[in-house]
Length: 195
Length: 194
Image 1 (cartoon, each protein chain N blue to C red):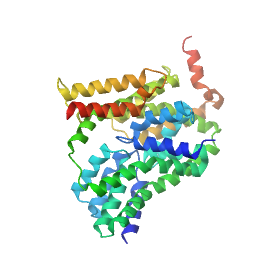
Image 2 (cartoon, one colour):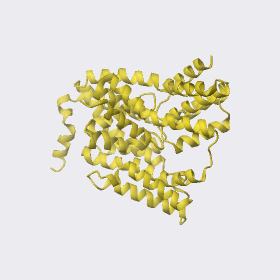
Image 3 (cartoon, rainbow over the protein chains, first blue to last red):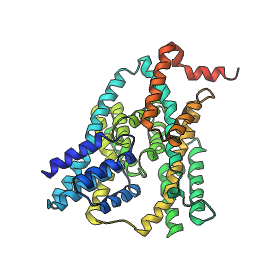
Image 4 (cartoon, helix red, strand yellow):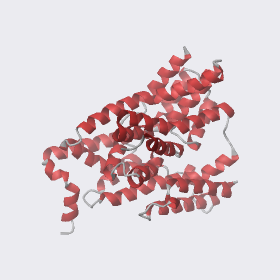
């Protein structure tokens, strides 16, 4: 039964996803392309590209796409395929969601415990380093272009500086320094400069 | 009490603008939860990030689960999670239905060449705004720098770094009196200038 197989596979992918999307790519590829043959390697590359260019975490993007494609290719029809997409997306978040609920319930019951307070105090400072590392790891040629006096790199640096300064400097929050406004502006700028 | 619909709308917005995954939505979440709506304090927000990062599952969904639970219990967390993934799921579904191959679109590529550096800047910015609000001192500033260096330069897993920090924090609390620790940051603020 394809639905059951989809459900179990994405249940497994969901619980083994640690540390965000990119860590799980090889796991998804192994399950979806090599074991189950639900996608061809080309389709998998497509979905990676799409995940970077559409909203949503890569784990959920893949689940939705595979759920639709696999059931459609197996001849379940349009409605059955939409059902497959929802089922796979549901499966991929189910176990982490339940686990998270248990942990959050436990922690809110023990919030005043001094040891919990101390541990989180240490974690808060560390998380800043985690975010910094995420930003540093994105300082690549893929994000900015090849360093040098060329259009792509200069425009990228200008966009980076604009977004960074507008996000960091004003203490007040206006509509023009909202992340949404800044993303829309950067996308529009890309459209104007590169097309 | 926070209404379900404002919870749902808030996460719908965050989900719709999650580009480049995970940390790229930290500034938007911070703006929504901490600054605009006052659902969390800065400390609570950072706690939620460290927990979301160290548990299995998708970062954004883990954040939604925690914030939803804190505001409206289990039903709140379901509302937040559904709101968070609804737009991404519908978007991919539409793509899968209408464009079975959708690579190499010239316009989409151009937009994303502009978006990528913006996403990097959006991830970098909260490091500074959060550090400013946490009152980091010379006694604590080495911790995030060390964490970033371990992950970025040495390729240590972020989960391992969080575990080490948790154990170190636990050990620190074990060998000092908890009351001494509960206002550690305030004390170092006052004692540094002397």
